[in-house]
Length: 397
Ligand SMILES: [Fe+2]
Ligand SMILES: [Fe+2]
Image (cartoon, rainbow, N blue to C red; front, side, top):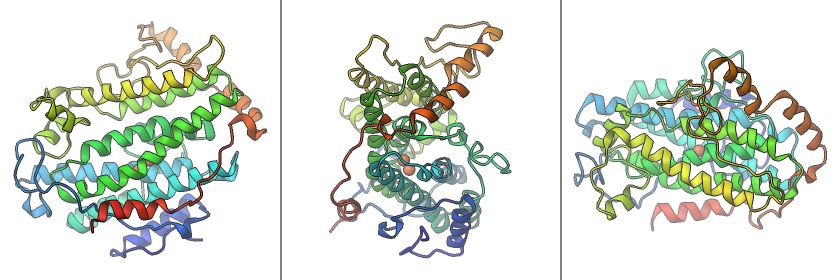
């Protein structure tokens, strides 16, 4: 069964999407029940909500945007977001070959279909609004490949976490809990965007994203409750995915983030609350750091909650924000998981033991033979009814 049906056709881009689907070899059952179309929120505020253009009407068309620099920046924001969506399906495409429980299949199928819908949404904006360069970028979104999933591919995905391997269901639930959670933050920052097609896309995507991170949190809880996977192994997967996700917030003192704020494209994640509290003028050099720290607090809470289900002395913890970073002021520096600086030679040996090891993967393979390594849970009664609710909530009367 083809993934894509009932879709609003736009140019020849749909053919690229079909080629991508067959090239990555993902077969998704149940896809006929999924409505694969762009969804635009009709309930957004009409005026720009922050930055130097605050109070002016939101821009509906790219030609209304004052400068070419601003248009270029929007183009990049849109295709970087789209790149992550397709990448995650490439990373997860193998999981359905071997599922622990029916519920896990449902969660993964739903998440993959929604990620394709998110990619489609970004491509719809690119093709509808950005002329020839939009079409080129929309096509490139289907030409890049997640590197670890397709080592022979020419062009990797744009951001580090989206090139990593998602080899098994522990990876999947750590990924959805920690990396999709970054997705929630990015979409939250885009929700008040001054360019209305992006602002109108963010609400429906956020509603779908909530299921992804919820599934991640729930999956990790079910794993911890089942008590079959050693805490030390869980910790190494946390070290891997939390550090990758921290990088996704971008460089410290980023001029892209600064201009994104000034131009009213990308806000603080907690912009609304900050404004209510009277914090109208943030340190524009520290925007990425600000959002990253909000994420850090949220993840720390999750780890704390998971620990409440672990009976023994050995508990999970947050890897330090300096650990295993590829972006920002701690990038490529030899810090351990507690934030202590090490000698480089010592670190080179250490890092292999702080991230998932070949022995971990071998042991997990064994553990996964019995599906009770993760607690089962019931399927929802109406598997796809939620889609109608999202449409109703955002399309207006
Ligand atoms: Fe997504
Ligand atoms: Fe997601």
